Length: 284
Image (tube, rainbow, N blue to C red; front, side):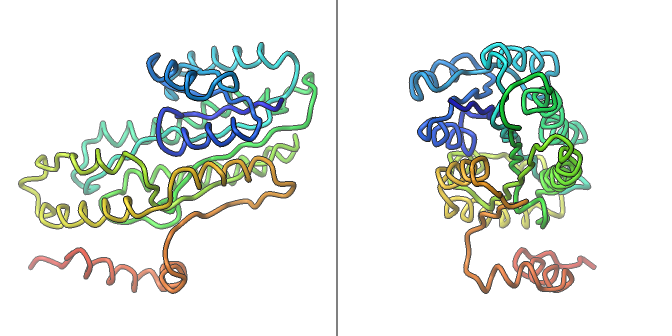
């Protein structure tokens, strides 16, 4: 049975990926931060799931998890690593708390870097292991190629993941380890219920406040109309198993005309459209 490591499986895309991969015959090692989540997922996914308890910012805990997986594989290679765990920090960039920005980058960028370093030997850089080289799937976002206002910290982290993935893909050609990016748009998960409760009162004295209130409503509505997480789980399985995977898979909902406009229109044109939609008019 092939095995895969997926980070951040307690909810959302990570949970859907773990569920689909287990159903498709993989043994899934899934990272969670809480023992309660580990127990819940063991009951839900059964014998094809093994929880790994670590935070992606905790290098020592990640290394211990990698050793646990190595022992379980008994000299075989790991078929895949899915770097999914992440958070989203929002707010006007000139007003976001610097500590929040640092945390955003630590979790979403340094986290995948640490996890990749720890599990790379099991994917095939350790030539003493038996089996074909594994694959790395990095979960990015449409925000990794196009940054909307007020999610600048998140977009910066996902742009970084795109660059990290491109360099990594080229470096790991030496070992036959493929690196694939998945860039979803909004995904229908419980996160949008939490987003509705986000307190933006910290910006009560900001000129951005009325625009933030409008943006929050638009953003949450788009999220609730996004793709179901299970679709991303199936796409993750595809990225790990098709003979010749694409370098990047996009999963953005919307009409073709809208996609063409967002991808092909000059950025200055898009700037004006976004400004008109949200009311980002210059204040004289």
